[in-house]
Length: 94
Image (cartoon, rainbow, N blue to C red; front, side, top):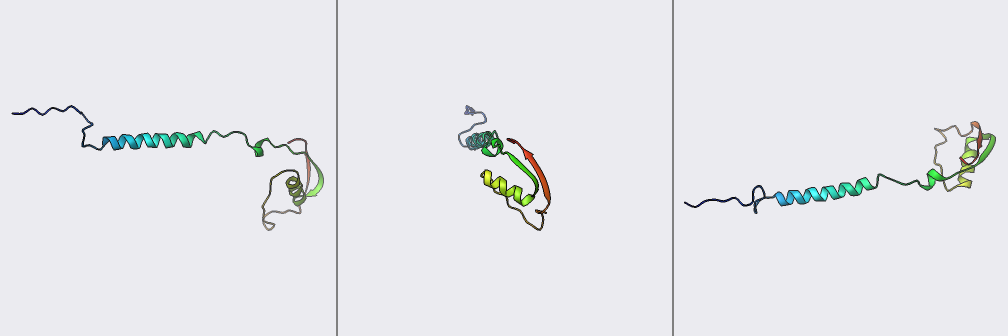
């Protein structure tokens, strides 16, 4: 009678465990790459300072003034936003 010795334990040569481990390593690498992008640095839009001093100006004029002084652009629907409403803006490096 011949003894059957198990030298490999769970990782038998014909098992698919090596594929599972490779898949787990690949998934961990992709997860690490995705999580790395979550930690973003301060961008231009967060560090830009604008000074505005407008009295009794329409919202449309305020938005146009911001567009002239910066690289920001505003898209809005005139039917949803009352751009003729008068506002007062006093902002120094904000």
